[in-house]
Every structure is written in C-alpha cells, then in structure tokens.
Image (tube, rainbow, N blue to C red; front, side, top):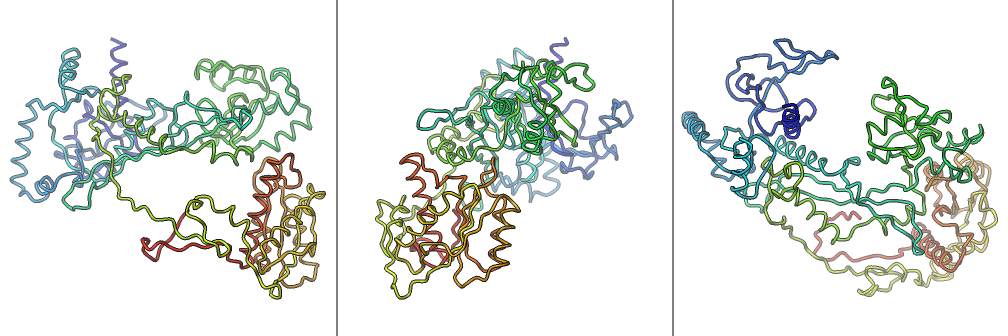
Length: 616
C-alpha cells in the first residue's frame, strides 16, 4: 500500500507545475472543485467557471477549515481556477466564430451537449489518470485494462490567453527536459556526454565541452493568411558549455609544487595571496553546474573536519549520503565558503568546484573548439523531436509532453530565405575576387594606396608600454611603423616615437598617462600606441576604459595592442612569428582607418532594401 501511494504521489508531482503565484495541473485535482471557486477572484490564472460558493477561495495550507497547518506559519489559498483548452489564436475561423458570436441560449445548449457527450468514450491516445501517451489505441486500451485507468475524454474547457497557454507549454517543456538532463543556467545538458578538445600536438586544453540545449515554445503562423490558425512552434538552439577539468583543489596544489592534496601545507603568505586571488571570484560546482561567488577560503578545515550545521555529520558524510558523491580527498584542506540563498554561507570541498574564468589561450580557441556545424545543430533538433513523440522515450512512462497532449506534426517550419550575391569588396582600390570573398583580409596586407609624397602626414607617436615589456617595445613599434609605411598611405609613423611612457597596472597605467600629457607640450597630429599587458589571470586590461576615456576627451587617437593575447616581443618559432605578423598587420590597418584612410569598402547588393541596418 505504501509503495502504491508513493507511486501515486510521484505521478501527481510530475503533472503539477508551480510558477510564481500560479500552479498548473495537467488534470483535475481531486478534492479541488472548480465549482467551489469564485469567478474573477483576482488570481493570476484567469477566470474560473461555475458559481461562486466560497468568496475567499479554498484553503489548502494554514487556512483552518480542516486544512493542514504549516510549521512555518505559511498559508496557501486557491482563489481562482479554470479548465483550459487552446487559445482562440490556435482555432480555425469556424471554431473562433462559434466561440465569439453564438447567442447566450445557443452557448447554454452547447454546454449541455458537451456535458452529455462527456459520458461517451473519446480516444486521443492519452491516459486521463497518469502521464502516459501511446502510439495506438491497442496500447492505450491494454494499459487501461491492466491499471483500471481511463482514456482522456471530452471535457468542458475555456480558451486561455495565448500568453497563459505559451507559459504552460514552456513550464511543461522545462520539466520534460529536466527529467532527462541536468540544468545549467538556462540551458540543459547531458552530464555524461562531453568532449575534451586538444591542441595540434594532441595535448588536452584542460576543458570539457558540453552540448547545451535551449528550447522554447511560441505561437507562429505557417502562412500570413488571417484565417490560418497559429501553431505551437518549438525553437531549438544549441550552445556550448565549458568546464575546466582541473578543480580548484588541483590548482591550489599545483601552486604548491604538485603536493598530494591531503599532505599539502600553506604558509601565511601563501594563504593571503590565494585569498586575494580567489575571494569574490565565481566558481562552478561540478556536480550540479551551479555558480557561486567565493566569500572566504577556510584553510583550517577539511570536508571531514567541518560539520554540517544542524545535521550532526561532516561535509564528507553529507556529500556521500545526500549527493551520492564519494570525495577523493576527504581530508584535504581548504574548504570553500560560497554565497548561497538569502546570502547564507555554504561550504564546499575544493575538489568539487572549478574556476569559471577561462585562460586567455583557451578563450582564443573557442571559435574552433566550441562551435557547432549545421549537421550537429540538425542532430540537436532531432534529439528534441524525441520529446514530442509518444513512445520515443521509455523511462517514466514515456515522454511528458505527448502525455499531456503536446504532440508533433511531422514537418519543419518553412522560412523563405533570399540568398544575396557576394557584394563587391574593394580593398585599396582593388576588387577582391569572388573566390576569396570569405577570406579577403590577407589581401589588404598587400594594399598600396600610392599617396602623394608631398601630402604625407607624419604622426607624432607617443608609445605607452607596460614595464614588463621594456626590452621589446622598441622592436614592436618599429614593426608596426614599417607595416604602415609599406601601405604608402597618407599617414605615416616615424622611425622613432615622439615620446615614450612606462606604465604599470591599473592606476599606475592611467596615472602615468595623465602625468605625461599633463606636463608635456605636445605638437599636432599625436597618436598614442599603448602596448598593454593585463594583470595576471585577466584577458583584458581593466585600465582600458579609463585610458580610452581620458585620451578621447583630449582629442587624441589611440590604439591598444594586448600582449596577453600574444607576446609580440618573444616569438618562439616561425608559427609564433606568423601569428604576431598577422595581428600587427591588422593593427596597422586599424591605425590607418582611425587616421582617415578608407581601408576597404563594399557595395550594397540591389536586393537589400534601403535604409538598412547590418548587425554582425
């Protein structure tokens, strides 16, 4: 009896969905009579039906009248309800006309007919008593014979608003995906399916890449004909979610020479440095993919030594019993204090969290290792189709969506697409061949603008360099100046910069620039070339915005070169040298463009109606 009751409750939990102050149920709730609810009682769910016999609703919890009391003093009262079908927008014109133009008497007669027809058996291949759908009537009738259940029949329903209907459909969709996938932010992933990319030497990049599904229902019209009803359309998008393969514990141990996690020790100086580096950083819990902000790091506690407040067990025992996770290093210090709900502290073992921020070299490779081809995106759509087909999923009685009446038409949404011809791309006055339209930037490196030598403007360049690249900034400047000179454009850099500023991090960066420009008499045509190196662990220079703002207010053109992306002063091999040349040639063209050279332009195809805005 207890097992049957538990199964019965699980079936009900599967088809009841809470959404803010509203809850949806896929079938009538026993004991919650809609006739007992007031009409238009102000609830968020929309109008109910029947007469108003209880003006203040039906108390479920803490409301007296036999309702169970809540230990926390909460009260839950149902003030309004309704039995809904599909919105008017999804009905045919004939169905809408019947709903909106019938006289009151005809509506009452139709209601009586509906009530009488409810006694007749109408099969739509769904069970009315549990969340199961079937591919044919034989399977449905066999199920009903074995369980004593009944098929879904006709019932009196009212059309909801389209917003309410779409909200319900998406709540059910999220529940269906959550039954078979793990939620990660707004997306869903299969935790068991991932790949670990490698570099060209087959060395792992240190990340795992998961396919993350984003799905959403919305109404759409198959064609613009006003008499055509809307349909429920499913949009499927595939994104990449990345997680480091090394935990925070691994990173801390590597910093201590790779010692065994349970034997490593930290001195006071190291502890202070680690806290400066990691406090307030965001980390990901590897077991449920939730993100947390680090509040503190406890170097005097381990999962085995730190008890869980109110449970009388250690964190190691808690993870083994509640999370079904056996920690590999239960005696390893430290414990990570993160911010939970309502700003309450939560303590996590360092081996089950990893850093959220990716290394700059990995970020640079993301377009290659974490993007999906049309074929893979097609596979994602096919995977989501299984959620809408009766019998396609075997566990938990089959797919939740078809069991609740959301099925699939075997067709794709057809969208008209106009393929535009390749526009005419002109670089340095030379038209790019159509065969190179997808990769024409390299040709611009050879551009010759044939400027009149008598009209060439020599820019007065102020070079700002980070103190860590003091030995190489001159050679980098010379390379950029030579590349600009090679284009024979109207604007040129001299063989030596007009001025040089050594800078550091943050306020030592913008402060050095402010002091130089505040105390130096400057000529016309000043251009600032800033050779920046962001602080360790950051891909972009935090001082960038402040420096750009200061220079722009003074009317000075400027160009940053990020030495974190690539160290242009230290090329280890020919491949490094080629990468540096590619980046710096782009910098040279960017400088010319800022000075006023039209580096390249395109013609707008005549098929594009004007005015137009291009986003890309």
